[in-house]
Amino acid sequence: MSEYLAEAIFSGKYRPGSFVPKEVDLAEEFQINRSAVRSDLRQLVDAGIIERISGHGSKVRAFEEWNILDPQVTHWMTCYAAPNPEIQREILAFRLDVEPYVAMTAARRATARDLVAIEEAFDGMAQDMNAAENGMKRLHSDYDIAFHVAIFKATRNIVWSQLSHILRPSIYLLIEMSNENATDPEASLERHRILMEAIRTRQPQKAFLAAQAVLGGTADALGLEPGETILGSHFALPPSS
Image (cartoon, rainbow, N blue to C red; front, side, top):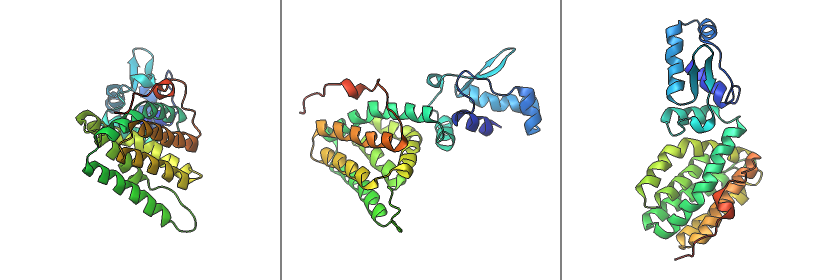
């Protein structure tokens, strides 16, 4: 039952502020007792997704209240959030705020091993796309996510490296959908190449802008507007050292 509710919430059927079905209705629909219903609802409460309101039922909380880095929540997000543009937009906004700075740091700190990992992921994307049959070219999502994770690791910062694992499901959600919807995968691959080269040639400012361009392509493929709160939109880049 918790999976049913998670799918309904993450897909947007039940939006923040709305109430999910009452315990008695859920027990009847799923043919389980109310203690089992409460146990399943508890999973969503612990994840920060719903709150129990005495005498009223269970209400979906605002997105910012969700424990978005909880492994269970990221699993639900990956499985069920694809139809929900609001969640996609929140993830995209976060990535636009963070990943250009990550790329800039990687351009300053990446080791030879980091550069190899980024290049191998890029080569995987290119080879898979060029091997596509019947003209159905698209970037391979597993290589694409490996490319971005490798850049996080190339910061040589243990927090960013760990975050790359925690954030992987939510990043994958956007990558998978954007690669399916992209009308010009060759152009997307070229944006990734420019980002890779900026990191390889130690050009932090170019890496910052290249990361923004990659994510701008993601936004276009998904038909999303990033919004006006993106830090990088009005940020003066620090001088390249």
